[in-house]
Length: 215
Image (cartoon, rainbow, N blue to C red):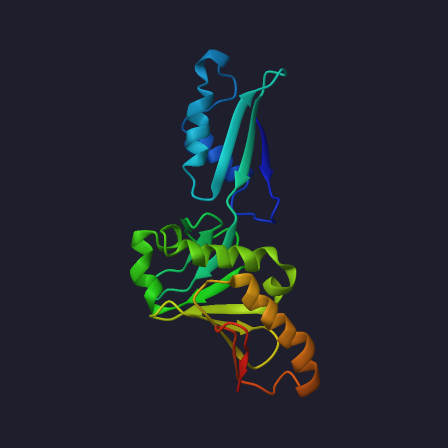
């Protein structure tokens, strides 16, 4: 078998050993030496895709007679901090378990409202998709991905962001008009903080249109 695992986003949740274990049911069903007619490629794909960290798998037979396996991993964009067991969220809003093999460096999310909502696929329903879009926006922007250290969602669904640099809390409000709010915050970082100092304010609110409230 020839195994290729796509680590486009530097994810290492699954390796060759884990993939071979899925293909052979942890060694119970050997593939090497089997006649080609006895190998069900589609079934092998399904075995690999059953792993939560696998987004897509392709298994095919090459001209060299070997079985080739291409694996694309899921991409987590946040980690929900819960009292019982933390979980990841991927770019589609799916819930992923933690891994003993690898820890993703993603934004942690706290909030009592989340533990009640996870069973209803909060980040995939009509309300939760807005939060997923916000997380993707942060993940895809190099500056905000580096600057946002933590996100908190309160019982009303309003968001607070804790930055890596500065002693302030950013009151973001609901996950709407995301680009406008981050543009205002960027103006604040570029034009206000260099003048007054990064530790001047404890609270920065960008929730309301056409204004920034600082205290």
